[in-house]
Image (cartoon, rainbow, N blue to C red):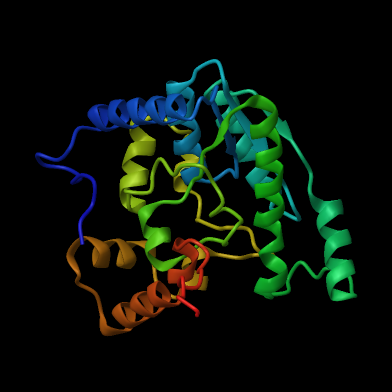
Amino acid sequence: MDTLFKIGGDGFRMKGLVEKLVEWLQSEAADRNASGFVVGLSGGIDSAVTAALCKRAYPDNTFGVIMPCHSNPEDEEHARLVAEHFDIPYKIINLNEPFDELVQLLDDKPYDPAQRDMSIANIKPRLRMTTLYFFAARRESLVAGTGNKSELTVGYFTKYGDGGADLLPIANLIKEEVTELAKALNVPEPVITKEPSAGLWLGQNDEEEMGFSYGELDEYIKSGKASERVKNKVDELAQRSLHKKQLPVTPPLWDIK
């Protein structure tokens, strides 16, 4: 298990990392004849870092979309803070009503914000993905996803939701590296220090849901060292989520005579 750079000591300089990621973003967009990037601004550190990198790569065509959906009001506040801090044009699309209507149609009962039902909760990121691709198509841009290596390792993302993107700029960075990069990019402090949450339900917390801390996960990714409890949980989640990182399965080409 390895990571993109080491923190501290003689580790990789943040400036060099930023330059490399910006060059990569520019190259990938050019290869796809894209005019820029669309980023979903959640108010969290991952989307802030992704947006800041995209803004550096395409200063005149990076667009943010804030998509509250029965969300903590602080998330929208922090998303606005990031957009305004980095001078990123943005639009707020409130998804409460379409989400409520879809849940009522599918589940035949009103939405309960405290309900821990993943079949319902995953509708939120899938509505957001649909919204992002609308703006990306209109702007001839790519959707920049916000998944980091820690989340991707254990499949902590929604298939065809926040996992639905054209490219993942911070996919090689574990959570602690994202934090270091956020500091180097001058991401607002309240965004860096807030507790990580995907906002899937009322009071949802990433580490509580996963069953271990990002620190424990990052250490296991870096060194392979962790308690048996953490090792077993991480390995189990990684195995169960393999399908999220694969293309749809197709049958073999049988020679039928």
